[in-house]
Image (cartoon, rainbow, N blue to C red; front, side, top):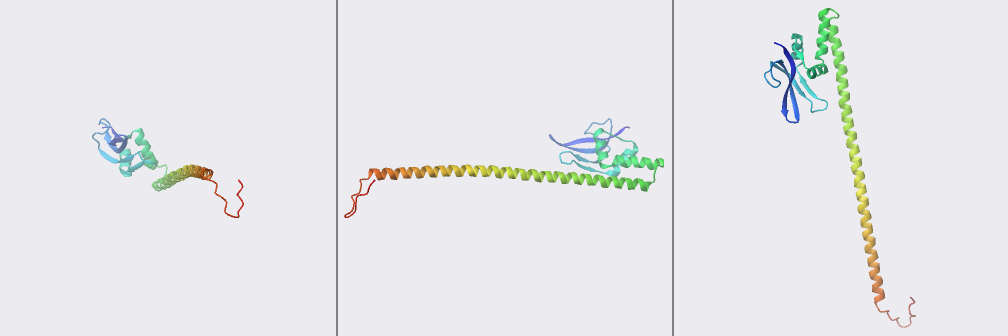
Length: 187
């Protein structure tokens, strides 16, 4: 029986979620499988991978063939590198302690790269939020300026109308007679 390590699709339409399984190559994609090795969620950034490292390594050592996507996932998690190192130990190229040291060094470097990517994503999100807030503040400032200009224009128009009304009132009212002893006012 040819065993493949592949993905079995789950999740709703447009939001795929996968199980990483070891299955007979003749079985349908989402059908019968031998063992579930983990899960893969490509909807997050970076993708969330939950993998049973020992089971996956055991299946690879038994001869299971991963599909292209599963090969990438196993490589990302270091399962293929561990298999490669165990092959070197079996051939006598180096000792098991050397293989373990090499793997731990690689794992530390990988975790550092993942942490830096997460930090970069968080920093990008913060800067995008700041830019969005600055743009929103600018729009609000422009709106406030436009509203202030409208109010100032309305107040000026009201003052002009009031002044015109007072001028009409002054022209329409009969000239007041000067009081006794006062000279008539000159216009």
